[in-house]
Image 1 (tube, one colour):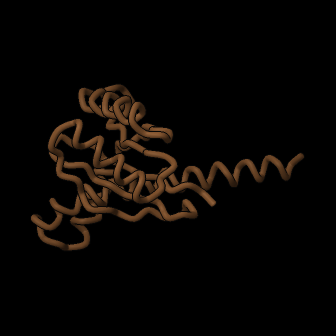
Image 2: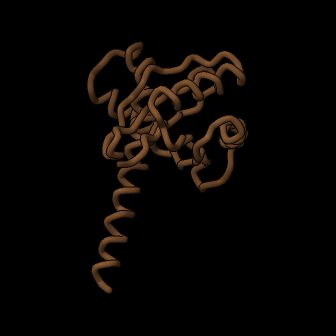
Length: 151
């Protein structure tokens, strides 16, 4: 059994949140967190880690197109450090460059109105972020099995 993973799409006003299922196969969006201040934000994340028994926190890392750091990725790294000091589980950064673009495209294609789309984009983006991580992890497990079968 895998430990659940709590994923966070860090924003200046809101944080999109998603949690993996207990098997580490699928990602489900959670209620978006309206940010207040750093201390409260960290406390809210702590509560969610406990509530869902998360064994890992995944933070979307908004790198620039060339993979370089941005002002926002530096803020995310600082938030990750604060979480690492407070949580009893690993906090990992994961490249999120395409998730917001993909979330907007999916929502636009779904035909829902602009206001609903604005409210849903954080949750959809973080769900895509977590799903990409879960899919990557599943691929890593498959590759290890293939390597093991070769020997």
